[in-house]
Length: 499
Image 1: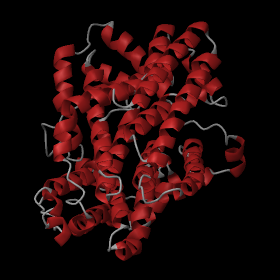
Image 2: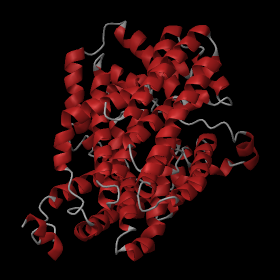
Image 3: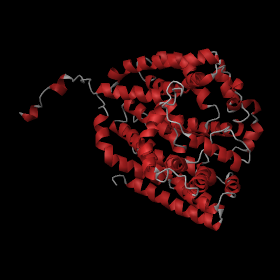
Image 4: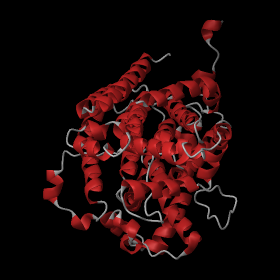
């Protein structure tokens, strides 16, 4: 392993998993919650320090951050540990043991898959990534501006038709997840049917619009970007501040990789981290406390009283739920997918399923269908929430590994690790190619945002926000190989020392 710190992160993750299992067996919350969290948090701090100070090892930062934020932070927090303990009390101990082990092993699994995919496809990826001189702003800014305006027009359409340009976005932010149960609260008057719902999903493309806007802020077109900033930021906020903590974390880390990951920023990055981290934590808390009722119920006293109960995303408990469901409802009943065919389905079906998410099934009847998501949500509602229901009213998460077991069988997690490892390799190779090149950093940042969203629960719905920017940046990479860099006289002259 060329990166010695990765070995440290992997060993730390394995140690946290074993300690957590021992804590579950001994029924001691401090051992299965706090100690593994301290280990994971320390590794994440080390990786973050190395990245922001030395501008190296993006893969280590993302793997440790995902492992800690999603699968360790909730039970590591002494203010939320009692809630975690009471929640898992009804889960069979064998599922607690396996679930807590896999949850704390997340960092190790991601890094091992990263190295496996790097060894398998690293050379091919390096050959595909354009050189810095080919991806210079003189070559990229014009096409990127054109792509931005095309995407801006597409995103503006549903916001104008359904949301009166800004009214819908503002009401979505105020209503938060209350708009999910009652769409009239969100401010978007959508015509019915699958076509209307799919067209509304186009509003999620504002995430891609934001990433292109971020890149163009450093171009010669920055004045145009600042003029359009109110609309871009408001439409993005309507998605990111609608009670979703995943969007907040994904966009925050993407912004950090692009802006703070620039070698030209230097020590000024410390100033930005000092104000940015508390602001993100505050927004996460607001989303956690008021997302079901909206900001109309905002109470500063309640926010202060629960200020330290930073919930993050409860990935460990979700992993336990997913393991129990797979064991009791699928594996024990002999209805688990065939491991071999399930593996090959996952290899090909996942990207196709994600790419077709926006297209209505009525227009494309061959679009893959995933009944397991609804079936698991019904289990969660009836068993976990104790709400008898025959209709799924939420999208429950069975965790990163649990989701793949349920859908593809025992080899399903390896399918997930193949794709997650590939994304992590792409992000790291783009960044390492030249951290000072804006094109390489925006590619890395976009891949990081997509990876962060999928690390909580690997589902095709997370393809929607990132499809446009992925397509645009891929086309730019392909075109850049056909651009011949203009050499200066000194660069093109023969080396006098050779004669």
